Length: 331
Image (cartoon, rainbow, N blue to C red; front, side, top):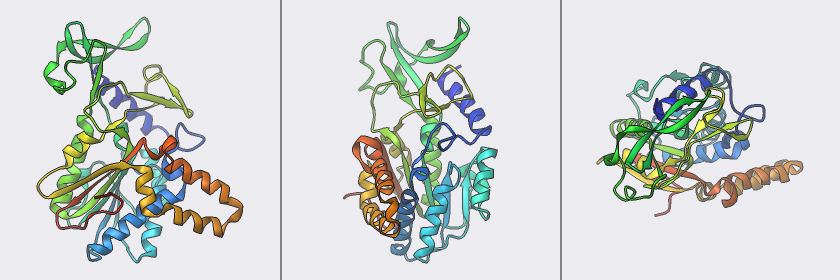
């Protein structure tokens, strides 16, 4: 099968059968690191909502984990007088749906973006969602470009070049790269972003996507696996490890663009969080709990500093025509 089919099947089983988050799981996301992350997203939404004239909106999160980010963001929204007309979570995992329902009892679950209500503007949040969607990989061989396939050899799974030429699939700027070069595409991610952008164009609102990645076109193998907070062989234990790949934000932005939407970014997560006021929030929390000041500073640094999550993680915004420019994105 293709690497994309392998990744899709493995992650479908993985997420359907466990809660992978936190110290007892396989990885930790920004909302689990600090409440400040979700609070900054709440401030971002509240600012946008006020400048848009305080319209009725629906809060949407795609891949909402345990619901931690939504809970922090919605609590912050309430302080600004913003009460979304419904909380809508796009989630396939029954295990994570249960965790989300416990934290957000009034939330409605949906299997896909297409199932979201179409009556009001949407504010969509997608944090570390796109990285888990399947990617296609292509490798330059002595005979030209071939899609990477996964097959069983000598009792284990390995990635090997397929037989069908795919040279026309490779961006022209990368087509001349040397033998062994790997190029990735993520049509599943582009499709979801296209659906979100279409909804914003029709209904109004905005979207914030946060993930780790780069702006392509670029070459390189970014498929990775994590188990118990350690990197693992992506092909060693399918369905029992978390498979992800770096997000091509240039491709994601391209999928979001249409005449009636505006695309901003990407900008580094550290730049965005600083612009939203994370340092002021750190001071407030530290003053309220001096014994936790060092812990809170460590959380902030992990989210913001370039050597940690501040540069690798990127933020991309999409807004409907006629809506204000979302905060946190330099001119």
